[in-house]
Length: 282
Ligand SMILES: [Zn+2]
Image 1 (spheres, rainbow, N blue to C red):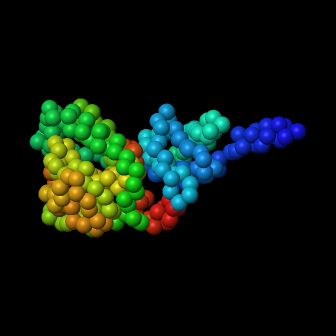
Image 2: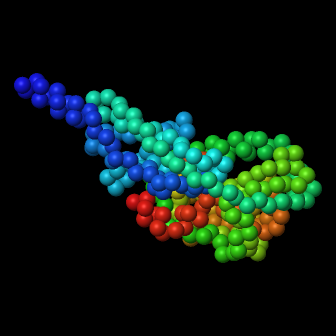
């Protein structure tokens, strides 16, 4: 009888289903999504999205993973695997994330011959590899505090996700992976949130650029600066001046290109400026 009860209890504990919440439940391409998993205290959690394991962090009593929905992801149901590791063995659950359809506007861009030549500069390949490596940074500690600030005051001249057609380039199609703000050369650019400086140096295409690590796979980047005011490795506070607006790299005039990455996927940074989104992350 006791053996039966023990077996029944064991089956009961094995059958524990984690509570999984996806916020927003039906995201659009370019949005950041939070996955919250509540499991018994002795369990560990792993989340896999599109064949990629996502880092999961314990935040306020539950596990949280962040993912960026790529701007070119087709609409439809996309499976998310949640694996719960317990002493009794692992269990895997599949949650469906229904990604909405989204149409982005398009824009034709005509670059000067000098700017077009930048795409053929030999060190671009090595610079791309450096960006790829840096964008994979996932510091366990959350450094950001509350909503992100707009890094500069200025009119938005190109939203996130804009389809760009470059006139006269060998690879004419591109997706705008950030938000452009028009501002005069020399306008201060501020850190959108607290973080650590991963990169502060000149690049061929991005121009003089700063990349900040806000922790847990959330990074922000600032392109085409006239100059930087920070050094790699230093910590910055929210609102600290990190550089000035310029038109270095592939830019047709002075502006700030502001980008936000979640585990290397570019997402719309404006979502992170809404206090409501930050409240839902708690
Ligand atoms: Zn841009």
